[in-house]
Amino acid sequence: MTLTLDLTPTEQARVLAAARQKGLEPAAFVKQLLTENLPETADDGRPSETVVAQYEPDRSHFYFKATQEEFSAALDEIAQMNKNLPPLMNGANIAPSEMTVEENVRAMDAFADENRQWPVLPDEAFDRENLYDERF
Image (cartoon, rainbow, N blue to C red; front, side):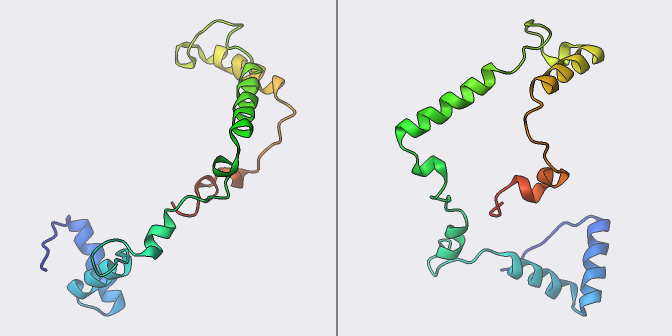
């Protein structure tokens, strides 16, 4: 199979520099990039079991193991937590985008005051690799 790629001058320069660094012709370098990053497939073109296994859900998760009663109880608990959130602007149904900066600050301060018992998360908790499952 022959492919033709339309590369910007910047992309072309990056490919040439990387190929030169590896001691390869640009076409060989691009082919190496493709073959190293293609998913494995079975002989019939379907993804291999290894590839499929990457996307299998973790069946040990609560979502899969919980009984209907346990799942309902968890949903009730989440609903109860949401009821305990302080209303914005003393019960007024105002979207944050419609609030002034001062109103937003007061609403966030009220939220923080009501939830001081929650644990403080370290900065690493918000790193991309900690937000998403390893499969992604």
